[in-house]
Length: 349
Image (cartoon, rainbow, N blue to C red):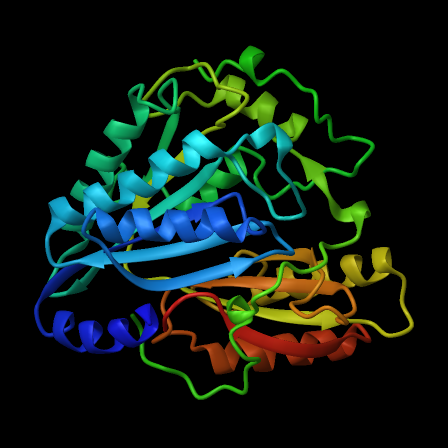
């Protein structure tokens, strides 16, 4: 129902002024809790414009919008409070990178709203999360985009915190003491052949192979927190909550391409997919305004074979549309003896 509501709501706000906020929660398997999180945002005054639940990544993206900044702020904080009170990062197991229970909050301008206005909202949300609440201690907060005085890029911030470096099970330490780790987008619709919205699946799905799991925060990130002082909040990381990145940018389209290699080992598929991912990204000399990461993914249906996903942030689809990204990935994947299985969006386009 909230998707239908978004269609009419979107037509209205794009002619006027509104803000959106995407909240990424490190939980994708507890359907009852995810329903409560969504309901808490609505009860506080937000409109749910998208929800993407990924059991394989054990991660959910919840997008809220409002024509009133204060109502959206209240809705985002209601979702965060419930998530922070209900989840424990030490028990989180998945292949997707994360920094905290509430991993990431991104605010976007819609219609006639501006990026600085979205940045102001992001800063207000960040300040409240940096203070202690009914969930416990305040969170160390790292800002980016229009919420940061120098406009720091999210990708650069994540690299500084070793976000993209998934550890092997032998390196990951689920019992690491985080308490000792002092830390002193809507774009035009594209006509791609994509798989049905995976988040519509009603059942909890089989997680990816245990070999792709790691628990909590990896040691490399814990070490990075020693040398990266948060912009707001305490310098001490609560082991249950982790940290949060909060920022404001124009709408980012999240577009993923799933790859498999029929006769290849899991490790070989991952290695080759990482080459595809790197060569697709701007940083790797590929397409402009594209950020990528290759991650093991179990698929969205019970009988799916595991593969590796090239997860893409399309920073400006007017410069690089999803169709061009898919063609690039198909070309590179073919050279690596990999098959493109499906492609899909995780947020509104």
